[in-house]
Amino acid sequence: MDQMSHQAMGYDRAITMFSPDGRLLQVEYAKKTVKQGSTAIGMVCKDGVLLVTDKRIVSKLVVTGAIEKIWQIDDHVGVTASGILSDARVLIENAQVKAQQHRVTYNNEIDILSVVKDICQLKQICTQSGGLRPFGVSLLVAGVDETGPVLFETDPIGIYFRYKAAAIGEGEVEVEQILEKEYKDDMSLEEGLRLALKALSKSLGKGFKTERVDAAYISVKDKKFRKLGRKDIDKANKGGK
Image (tube, rainbow, N blue to C red; front, side, top):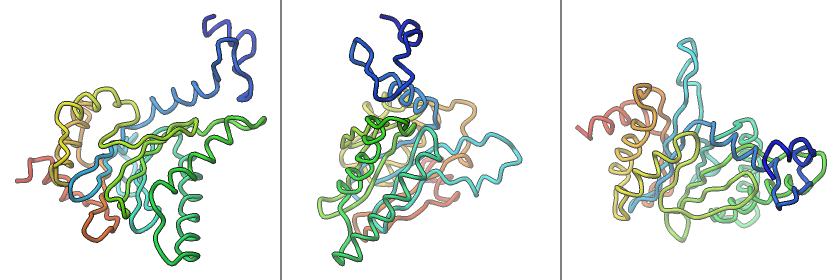
């Protein structure tokens, strides 16, 4: 049964309705929304974990410094998103509250997997409750805890996987091809940033400019979330010279 006949029979009208061949069409539409989102890259390095994303500047009149595509959840956790960013904001603000509640209750930092599971729990609820729609966003959650630097990807249905390096958004296929060929376990954060910029540049083509890049990292040394400035990104784009 093809997609048009599914639509004609109404199988895509409710998130709780399976099609005869076992598909949730609303979930598939949400995944397509993510594919249309701006490209985001996450990478685990020997000295930390890195997030790099495309700000996708839509107008020359936009203040590029005001565009935020990477958010801090706690001192040791960061996240970036692709898809509907207003959906991402709801998930991120919920995760921020959970992280602070954990810190106040237990007097220590929350582990990254707990953050991911909580985000995915909220996503999953929206796939089996009438009157709701799936979150149209995928997240890359990066951080450093007692296990070391870690990176997780979550999809709209609430599934998560742990990665060494991952990409989401419109450039996912092109970026992952480069990562699979050139990523190494012993890369430093500096080397990882250069590789991420190279992959983003090839994905965006002539449209690539460092001013449309947002980047952040959490180092193993102090477990602190830090945004990278334009000078750092420009330097990495020039090969560290």
